[in-house]
Length: 479
Image (cartoon, rainbow, N blue to C red):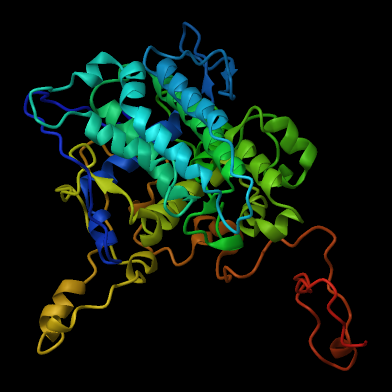
């Protein structure tokens, strides 16, 4: 089966690098992003990496299915190429710089100011670090232009390390790291001929060490969540480990197979096991999904259903890890790429371009693209400018970046459906159709409706949701 992949640049001599710039300044700019070449390439690369993480059948000489090979963290069967290995070393170098910059011991309310020192140290050393850890084919790519490839590579890598101004980190920074790796892929730095092994090396050999670096930064410098949804978001900081981790537990496939949308790997843990600390401790060293869950347990206290209700609700899905993976793809578009607070700090250069994708197919506007913040217009535009104002703020439609002659017929891309996504939880329709996001369809364990004075006197019984948390020392109504 011919799976669409992120293409490499065709003509090195004709390519001109530019300094990446900010283009998403208002909410309606997000809809322009959703029809851009950058959006198309980001999704192609994410889907390409995602498919490679599904377990594989080792074929016999006769072509029949045989032994199943899964891709666990640290798996010796995933060989690191001459590009992946050094980039893993780059992540280790960035991690080691944390030891040079201990957190400030002084009192603070939010992030630790020493993170700014760490960030400035990395920024100063980054040109030499890239020179040491990137392949020569990338560093020397079209050196005839005034601006070299390092301008775009440094911008995306620095953008992936959090904000030194706001002392925070979130999925927008994670997106920037995906673009950093995509830049290297587009310039031919990775082995594009391998049948999934290079992609698995990128995920397990580079992205996972990057996530470990980020988690240490968050814990060391107490970085705030960037644009967090609070407890109603999937995760305060990351999304990609849930995408790739759910694929790791999906059913095994052959290269010719479609990407599965249901089922699980034999002996994979049940999705509901995210609430079992023993299972999380066992699986977090093997799987990216459980590694992310384990980090939540490291930094948050209290019942899992209380601090991570969306992940708790997802854990009730019975159709298998492939079903969860399909929902994660939809959620990535709806909750990361379509949200102004997330993508507003993404920068656009020549490799991830703001230019419109000419193959984009328009689809109906969704709630995610319609309800975006808009900055107040200057007074100069106010008088007698109704028609002009309406034309300026008209919201373009979301698109189908996969509309090519080689259509992707595996996991349905989020933009392939005509129906609008009205809630991030609609990515998992088997669980939450027609339900409000403020509800938790999967009730916490041992939580039963309790009789109250209102129920004894003919009032309505409680719905089964936990009682509101009371401030310590607060008096009850009976005292």
